[in-house]
Image 1 (cartoon, rainbow, N blue to C red):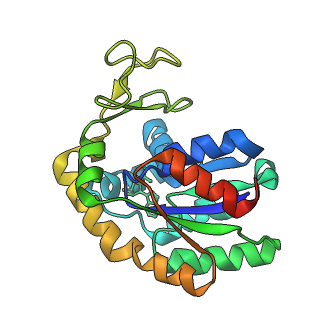
Image 2 (image 1 turned 60 degrees about the vertical axis):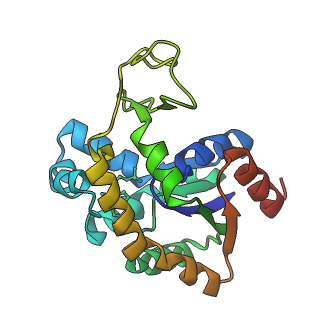
Length: 215
Ligand code: AMP
């Protein structure tokens, strides 16, 4: 399947993407994960992106479009892809449309994961992520704790609270989302691609997507 996952930080895009990859071999492409990897490795991209990320701001479109222009050409995308956290601005959505049309690829849907702000705030402040960039398993101190506190069940690395998951940065990220990313819902509605789902439970979201793509 070829999907865009739209939704505020904490709406569950990453969790849903991981559940969907298991269904048909589509690959999850998370610009956030790519950027965090670059920051950790200290690459030029990482150095340019870190300040924006820590402040809860968006990284400039040109950097993101360079990443995605290359990523979509990789072989693993042939089986399908789930775009998690991209596009995040109207210019990114326009650029993606151009890239896909050049590649002759059609999207199945742009899925809008709709969740109330209070639920999101609670989810993000209690979220913990595996610090191993090859793993990045997501936990939640309330709803999905690791078996041993602070240690990833899958790979044994420490689980951490992300730098951009302090209350101040979360509040900024939600404002950024409302200003710059929420308008994409209208964009994809106009494109005839929008699938709106109540995202309080990931299982419900996955069921709605399966029905949409005929799995
Ligand atoms: P995420 O893990 O998707 O919440 O992304 C973490 C941070 O990476 C965001 O708060 C942004 O600073 C940056 N980021 C990720 N994807 C994008 C994007 N498509 N455009 C701009 N910035 C992005």
